[in-house]
Length: 201
Length: 233
Image (cartoon, rainbow over all chains, first blue to last red; front, side, top):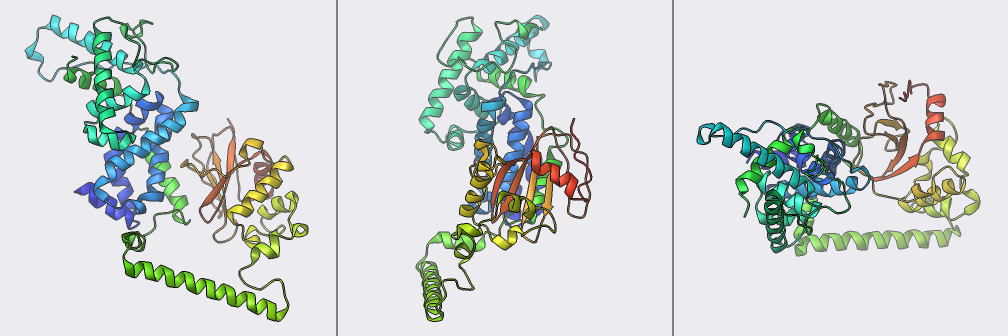
């Protein structure tokens, strides 16, 4: 409700509403943009561009409740435009992995699981954009398949298919099987890869 | 099938450090400041939304307005014929300025138009998008513009770092690279700009154009005392 209210206020020209929307959306937007560009700088540029686009176009948004998919679509499109020229590899320092319930597993199991999570992250970064972005939107931003379809302007069935393919690819990567279809062929990875040993650093 | 919870946690680990920088909000607010004075800023949506409803009444309103415009236009043309003049005093700026090629400004005149107090003002020309296209073409032929800039791309939402108000409603925005935080205002305040190279955006009626800047930045710094500093790394 507060987001809807902020959008309504912004449509009336209330500048403070822009700050409210920034507070809510800047973090997820930068991460979505990063999942497209693979560059923090380009991701931030994309988000900046997206917010400016919001200023220009929010008056055309008829349903304030649909702001979220509308805004994320702008972010993704801006990131796609910027990623053509700025896509570059950046090293990511993986954060410490904590379970929500540490007592549920033994220390040894925790070590194995943490390594597995790192391998999985590396595999996610090696997915191509068409599969990586839906994965981020579904499992990090927690959007529905319908919302993802709206953002990416593809059929919901395609979203479902891409998510399935991505999960399958990640699974096979995790168990050491090389799979071609959903992996990046021309773009460089956005994080240390399985092959270059970067994940073990 | 892979455990979806693991995917969530892997993304949480990998994306944890990807966060907006401290200055991002300031950049966006700066852009909003610049847009606020232009017609690109948020417009109240009431009227537009009502038009979108497409009711018969609104349709009729639009029709009446269009018919009125046609009538007024026809009246003006008739009046011109009566007066024996090919140029009316209202509404035919394209005739008075642009269709007469001999009256087209030269690239030098265009340049001087941007210098405060020198030459004709852009506002005197009442440039439309089509006319700006011609100006860009002229500037390109005079090698003022790189060939790939002589188009009319819609402005992209980057923060202009420098804004110069020529007259009311007329602006030149100089857009630097992304790390530039400078906002130079007509009253003469300049902050440090760290960009290596810039672009100029000419704004009128929502159309902003990108220009290569070496020459224009030069006269900006030399010919406008209120531009205090453009610093390059």
